[in-house]
Amino acid sequence: MDLILIIVLVILFAFIAFTVIHSYNSLVKLRNRVKNSYSQIEVQLKRRNDLIPNLVETVKGYADHEKTVFEDVTKARSNVINASNIQETCDADSQLTSALKSLFAVAENYPELKANSNFQQLQSELTETEDKISYSRQFYNDVVLKYNNACEQFPTNVFAGIFRFKPAEFFEASESEREVPEVEF
Figure 1 (cartoon, rainbow, N blue to C red):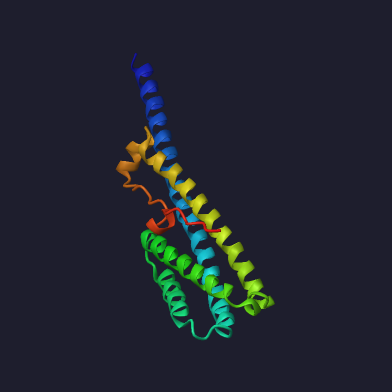
Figure 2 (cartoon, helix red, strand yellow):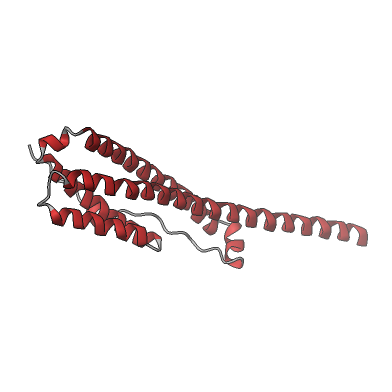
């Protein structure tokens, strides 16, 4: 009888040890995927930030008197670069998107600028980068959802609590981005 009890206890201990190790490793893997996917957003934001000075300089040559637009773009770009957490990045990114919209609105008033191949190339690259940023945000939020689910579902929630795994923040649109745009014909 003692031998059977020992065997059962060893099997039970092995099962518990396997569950703990597997759960912990799964949580670590998901947490690292969250960090990696956020880094991918930062890569795309940096790419956009690197393109912006070229775009601003191109537009400046045509629209010298639109100084506030350039200042807004420069300030918003600086805020994105200096953001230290997800919420600051979301807010700064929203400001920059708004400032870029203003910059492109200014460009609409200058037909020779719109025809400039340098401007067209920069605009095309920015559009492509915006698409990549959007995809990166979506991917990040998908990974955060998987990670947060793992932190909240049984049995991994037990180990998440023991090993102090905290839920991750979603990348959310700002209030201004949630507003329905007006379309006029």
